[in-house]
Image (cartoon, rainbow, N blue to C red; front, side, top):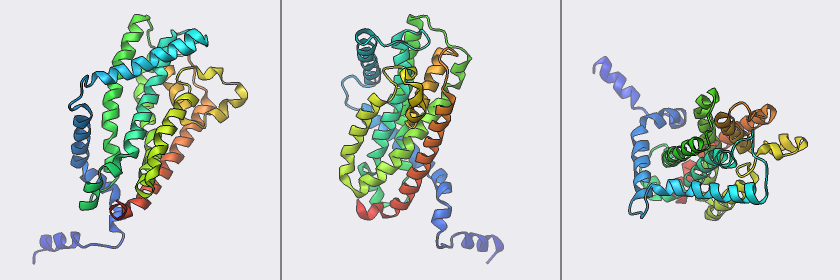
Length: 281
């Protein structure tokens, strides 16, 4: 046997714990599966629909109209940095919609792919990661509405708009941590499926989507930023409205810490549970 053949044989030897050590490398090796699942999710979302991708326009637009009327016209809450209320609301609605879409879709993704999980091996984390593609497509569509609103109200962004992709990534990370934990919990306890819509509904009103976070009293601001969406929404508005909409830095740092902890906890819980996914499903 030649040296090259011997090396090939050695590379095929299975070691105890080897799969764990190579898990993150396997995520890259199964990138084609990621794209296949992502494309399938996109096709399923818009296949045989009446209005198709226009729904990605209508949902955030109608929500913005309702919030503008209720909070801006009826409650007469002040806008942020003197910006039109509709622009301020939509700048907060963008990250919230992205967050809630990833959270809802990724949390139910593993149980929704039960047949695939029970038949073949692959890093199960590919499944919740693939669901983010659909949410990103809807997000990009919503950006067109934001651009139209800014043109209509003659709102000119500053250099901060260049940092918007950073806050998009933070939004995805903020959603991915709890989504992976919920995905694992739903496999073990199916009634967790009913928790996700409730959490999303409550989160919409406790996050500064329809109002400005500057309305929160100073004594409560740091505690309020335990909700990681507060810092992210402030960051989105800072990017869109410019320097007149400052970020509360202590709260933003706290939001980053919460995102990091949730991402670590969600990943850890998912990895510990996925070994038994095939048996539980």
